[in-house]
Image (tube, rainbow, N blue to C red):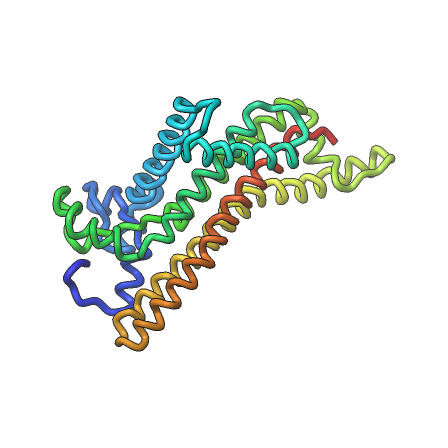
Length: 295
C-alpha cells in the first residue's frame, strides 16, 4: 500500500492480513488480494509470510547456537558463548524443576520452544510499517505481486495457524509418550478410571463414560489453551502497535504523544514477549512430565 492514501480501517485490515497463497474459486492458483479471497481459498491455503518468518527465525536460532557450540572455548568465552550458555543453563534449571522423569528429548525440546517462540514474539517490537513497506516497495515487484496483494505480517505468533501447529506438535508428543510409558491400557485407564473412583465394580463401570468425557475435555483443552494463550496475547499487542501507529498521522501533538506511547508500550511489551515464550516452554515441560507420570 506504499504511496496510496488509505483510511484507518483499510490500514488496520491491511496490517492484519496474511500474504496468502492458494487455489482461487475459478481453479487457478495465486495470491489473495483481499481477506475474502483468502477465506475462499479454504483449508489448503498457505500463509507465505508466516511460513517464511517462522522458518527464517528457526534457521537463525540454529545457526547462532551451532556457531556458539563449534567455537566454544574453555578459556575466555566470547559474548555469543556467554549468551548461549546463560540460556542453556536457564533452560536446564527450568527442566530440572518441572520434569521429574528421565528423557533426553525434553531439555532440547524446551530450549527450541523457548528460543523459537521468543524470536517470533520479538518481531512484534519491529515498527509495524518498516518491513511491510519495504516488502511492498522493493520485494513484491520482483515477484510480480501488486500493491493490493502485498500483505506482510512479520509476527508468526499472531497467526493462529502457527500457534496451533506448535501446540498440536506438543500434544502429539504428549500422546506418544503417554502411550509409550504407560502402555495403551494404562493410558486408557487414565482416561476412564479418573477422577471419579469407586470400589464397587458396577459403580466404577457406570462412571467410565463420565470420567472419559471429563478427561477427554481436559486433554483436548491443553493444545487449545496453549495455542490461544500465545496467539491472543501477541495479537492484542500487535493491534495496539497498529493503533498507536495511526496516531502519527493525526497532527504533531498526537504524533508526539504517540511516540512516547509507542516507546512505553514497546518497553512493557518486552516483558510480554519473554513471558509468553517462558509460559509456552513451561507448559510444554509440564505436559511432558504428566505424560511420564503413572498414576
